[in-house]
Image 1 (cartoon, rainbow, N blue to C red):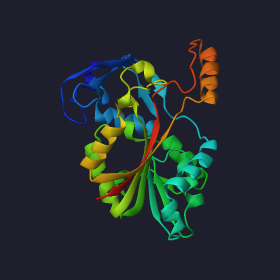
Image 2: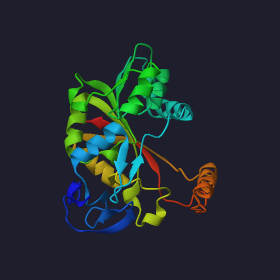
Image 3: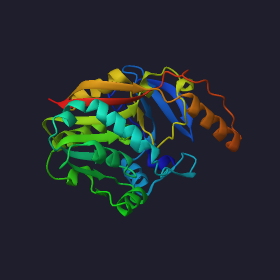
Length: 280
């Protein structure tokens, strides 16, 4: 598979200085010595990555296929309702309709949450490249299609990206397209992990899912990345994922997979982080 891999510099600062941070599925995740971002290197070509996103299947560097289609999680809807109510309290309180686009909408749980809490008359839609996910969302009557971001017309009050950042091979180019879709003074809302803040792989609480995940940034790095594409962070919300219930699930999963690892609740510095950013 070496002919389908490419060597890259740091996708944030372009440094060619880095050290090995983790290995998984025959891929290496390296940590930039200059800025601290973690990224897959060498990685599949952008054409290979795009096709994997479309069909929901990737290959390890050893040639083994693995699915990233996952499944719909209805329980996430209530959680996301609470997040949106908290972080968009002012906008919801104004009681003015909003135009909202969710990029990488998956099975549509976040779209459902936003539809439920925004003022009446709001227009909420999503785009999702993975055909199996998009098909399920459409069957549920959700306004989600598979247009690429470049093909989406007009501008929005809010554009959201929930757990999408780590899948993007070149966020600078992608970020420029995001900015075009956010009206002046509008909001970019993102959720992603803070993997770049972790010094070692041992602190990361789950599989890395390489090469489906390509880049792991920390909080300060994300602020820098967002500033580069023209957004200023206004609010941040951090959440631990290694709560007692999650640790129990990991224990049961380890037993079933015969790869038992005992996790101690709240022992990881890893956080899933929500960023509310204003276009400047």
